[in-house]
Length: 473
Image 1: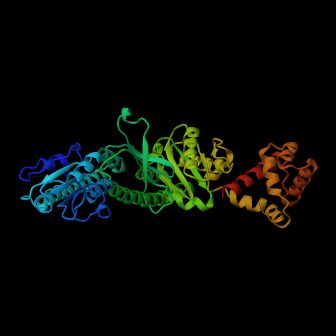
Image 2: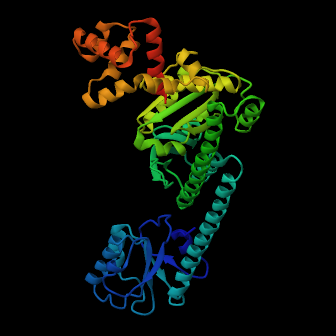
Image 3: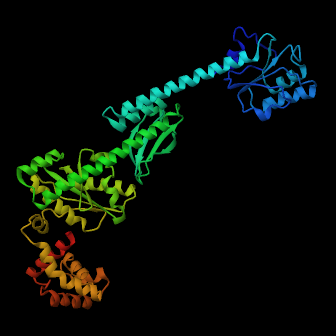
């Protein structure tokens, strides 16, 4: 560390003597400035010891002004060399310095100024070397922590120890990891925040509680965190594509039986126990982010995948509503316009297919959190590739879609509302803001175009399957 003013004055061999009445503060000497100019203020930055022989300080006015300007510049003391211009410190300078509280000491003729400068420089050099060694040692500690197998969590623990502060890392507005000290240190914390570049629009921020020391390590910590998060994002994207293809094969039925169980196990999904599918859909402009989006800590053990542009979480049997709600809250906090749905929890690959279709059917309701209709007829039929529901939907609803496109008649919307409201013309009229006769007119038009009457039970089932299959495609 820099040498302190009392230590410097007491250094053996220099013969320095404090001659003023001002107390000698225990402050570090930042540098030694040797000057003979009458006004050294423009050449000082503060913290220096100013050495002079006073050869140009020939009047009391100049001497007093010299002391005042040295004090204004923030110097810690004046060292006055004897034997050249003066045999003693000029009384006018000494009185002014005492008034200002600025220490003044004599430097005997035998002591060269360079000896004082060398002592200060050696102390500064030793401090600089110690700081470099500490910085390199801390670099190694952070790198070792990151590579320890515990990743960012261990890195932040080590960073917290080095800084003597609490640290938090957040992405998309949610905490990713943190390291905090005991509770008695947490009162009224102020945070210094540092952005971490990851190549994503994820608002990644490293927060450090104040005060903290070893600030020079923060830049390196930012770099390590940036590299690790970027690597994690690439791994997530790659893994989700691979698991997504696996789940797509299971959902389509092209992968089944023991082979499917083994393949799913390799992806971290135990198909022999009950599993539930959570499905996330976001606004079209945000879908690219789903490949790299970090999951909340509650989903650390869940397998994730991308299927048809949607993010899937496969989790063991749990409270699906609460889990989906927590996921929706995280996505909202991360700035996503998102819908979350979940399917029931079932065992075996076929059960995973059921859960997937239940979630996809529920997602169509459009709410932030969508609960499934357990084992609905539509879900069961969609699981089977042998049931041509999409062909049924196209054949049945095609005339309505074409008519709506040409005349903006909203027949599909009216039919969907009629089916979801249990065939109540009055309820449909209220929901769509129409007259009841207008609803009846549209329903008759649907009968004329499709040949199916939604007032007849068998026809209504047919239309219900067609509408749901079209929504799920």
